[in-house]
Image (cartoon, rainbow, N blue to C red):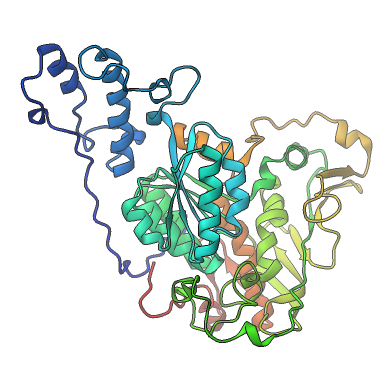
Length: 492
């Protein structure tokens, strides 16, 4: 693997201590049976080997609640008859609090899609919403609490305060791209498992920092490349890996282009609304004055914060190409491309583009906003396979091939990771500590293609890439674009 990418230590050092359960001396003259059972609740989080009882506040909370529930079963006649509801003990089909994963959400724009996917899970409870826009924050908290019919979710304006004070097992990071690296590494260092929206990060070096942090802290990561969990896309990957096309020599990924056509209005400029913490919204990015056409999703089309559709869809269609070809741990050796920037300010990402990647074995991958959206694999003897979402970005997945026999075949490959719900897969893996279907390494390799394509277009040169060391060869100017340039006061 590439050498660790190390950036300066965070300006916000982490101070954590093991959870300390109540001491027996708090009880006056307990009876011997109560003393024995309460003593069984005492534990040392530092000595346990269970990943669910890690040396974190969340881990200690889970273990304490689990043991408290056991003690409660044995002590109803001694200490608190009729005070513990059945749901707190996991009776009647309910999930006990000790077995329920706590979840925080960062970003209440894109994050609302993720929130809708997670609320139905009975073994997951959303307990924190972090958003710099107070209006969106309040709306998201209201939605959560209405779902649970009780006030369980708390609002936070600053993710650092949420990490400090909320007891989180997991977090979904759906903030703008320029925030992914800092937020993710901070969460991982604190022992929190992460579901991170794609692309993995805003710059390539930040992505490697996340991968290293996942490994260093033993955490579970799921990238938001949810097409891997769609049966049609999984079937396409099976067929390609199973050799139904023979040796694949070329892949075409039709990805989307375009940018907003937002004409300026007087109200777009000036002082940010009182409900928005704009200073924190900009965060580590270069400072720019407030413009309402940039905040809330449209930031994606401004290079200071995002990478346009080019970077956005490497986490979908290009990711499927990498996965189907078994390239989750590597990347191309050459990348070249061209593009046309957005027509209307303040947007400056590629409005249209085409780029080509060459791999060490001669495979070529072409991605373009001019191709039909989807992924097409070209094999031997005229055989091909195409998979896409059908009509539109949210259309039903469709699979086509050069002959019906390909689609009807039973691929020889076996054991390709399968799951039918991307969010459920994440929480299941948090419990089992198994790798997810879209790991941080896979997310890094897919995102790297987009970052390199953007650099190739920006510099107008072919980028020679070493996927083993993740370095650009013989081009210092291009190589300088791999690492983030954070605003003063921020580091990863």
